[in-house]
Image 1 (cartoon, rainbow, N blue to C red):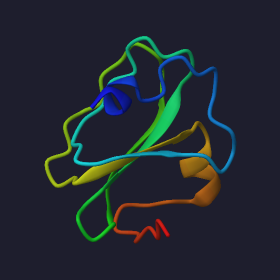
Image 2 (spheres, rainbow, N blue to C red):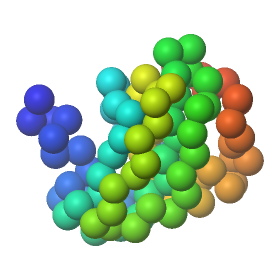
Image 3 (tube, rainbow, N blue to C red):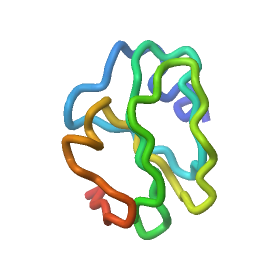
Image 4 (cartoon, rainbow, N blue to C red):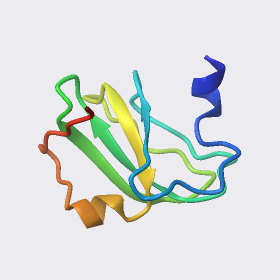
Length: 92
C-alpha cells in the first residue's frame, strides 16, 4: 500500500523506457510530483481506453471509467510512440 501511495513522489524524472504501472486505477494525481507525465489508461485486456499527455505536477487526471489500470510515462512518450485509443499494449 505504501509503495502505491508513494508512486513517483520523490523522483526527479522518469527516463525514456521507464514507466510505472498502477492497477487497479481509473484516475491519478500528480500532487507533490516534480515533473510532468503522460498517462495511458488500459482496460483488462491492455487496450488503450484513455490518453492524457503532459500532465503537469499538482493536477488530477480525469476519471476513466473503462480503465483497469494506468501507465505513467515520461512526457512525450505518447507522441513518440504514436499510441492511440484502441491500441493493444504488451507489458511483458
